[in-house]
Image (tube, rainbow, N blue to C red; front, side):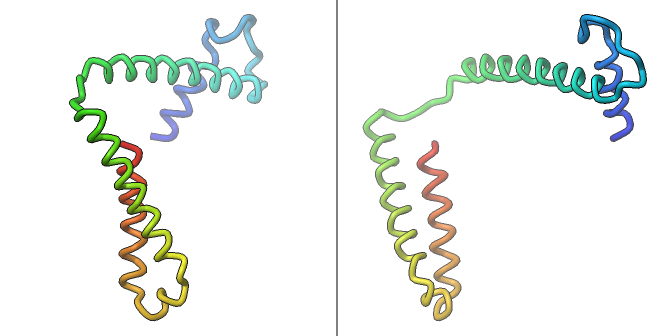
Length: 114
């Protein structure tokens, strides 16, 4: 699979549309730079298409006040769990609770993102 990918990158780099002038085959640095430029163009096209398709999904969200209330609650949970995580001595005495507070912190941070 890696050989096929490498061949595809080299084929993309050798296309005339990637270069203003043909490159000699003994310049791998120029081929790699051209392949990277072609890949950047391809990925930017993919991300633009993804953004357009996400606009068509019509993701339902609640009222603004409830979303704000959820964000504040997640922030408070994050603050409390970080406060509990700062006590390193509790990790020695209660390692399961320490791991649980770490899980709560990660969950609170991910809730704040969405």
